[in-house]
Amino acid sequence: MTTKKLFSILLLGSVLLSSCSTPSNALTGSMFQNTVRSDSKVQNTAKTGTGILENVFSSLQSGVAVTEQELLGTWHYNGVDAVFDSQNLLAQAGGMVMAAKLENQIDEKMEAFGIRKGTTTFTFKADKTFTAIMNGKTFSGTYQLNKSDKVLILSAMGGFFIFRPHIVRTSRGISLLFKADKLLALLNATSGLLEQSGTIASMGGFTSMLNNYTGLRLGLQLKK
Image (cartoon, rainbow, N blue to C red):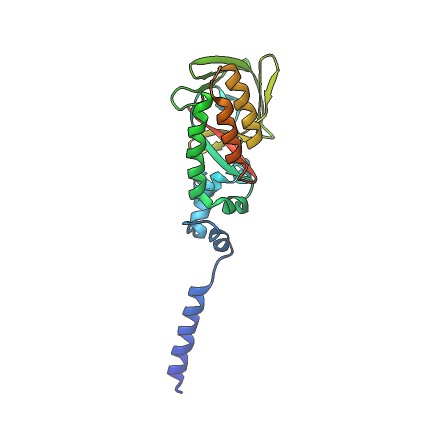
């Protein structure tokens, strides 16, 4: 074998080896259905807050905290965010595609509890009071923003109802993230205040659906 042929074989081998190598984060990306990501795409996703990281709680929680000044004003309900506690749990649930389908399914069920796009709003005032409009009815309470923990404490009915969702930034505005069981408690409370009919049956079906997912948090997606 001549030196020229030997050099050609070695060169071809190095090209084949380089084409088969896999970055460490590409292995993580292969867990998700219909998702192909390079290192640069992952970095861009982290900067913009879009894509798969918006379905993972730790990624959202690591973002810049919402300030009290930013919170002030009226926010409009714009759908549900389905967020999992880890990328592994998101993968087990079926990845981003299934997360998007789940959001649509839950958003439809939210309508049975009077929470609808175009009619549901939350208004936060500088005096630490808030007003929510759901199904044409208004109820109010007080709030506290724990910026360090990214938690929004909502108190209504003189403190009878207290909820502590995490408040995080998203590419579409902010999201009030509840653990699934806590959101069910909120829906149960608001349906009573709104005198919604047929919510008992809706609650049963909703609970059964959510029990199929581990480590799931549901967010009220809000935008100004």
